[in-house]
Length: 175
Image (tube, rainbow, N blue to C red; front, side):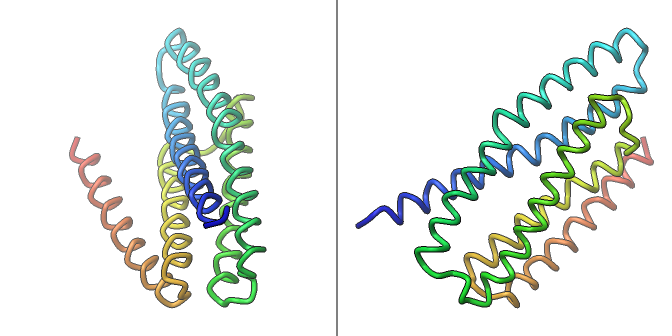
């Protein structure tokens, strides 16, 4: 049977963990930013707690999961000579975007820790959807091994996400 199926399984577990970390940390950023509108005593407690949670999540789950994803992914890429396939070239571009997303999340975390983050709650909510779009595009590309199918899938998800955000915005306005 060989090591490949086990490496692939570990890669998938790492990917799931990485995305869980990315999606959750931006949610923490949203709560952190929204804490600024609370009374000072409450704000200080909340900001300290969110900062602690963000740091633990970032260094305890998100970074290790990204490194594990890369290590297992590189092993598989070399083993199957993935770079020769057109679908993999799209996946590589999407992965570069995901790594840039990850690094920017790190910058947001640092800015929040230093009290200089200028992003609003709404901007962070939109930012959180970028990870979802990347996840969708990467999974469709890797599973279907077709850049065209991945593009159609991502477009469909973008429409659904935009509609959901519009509905949520409408609900918030009514409150």
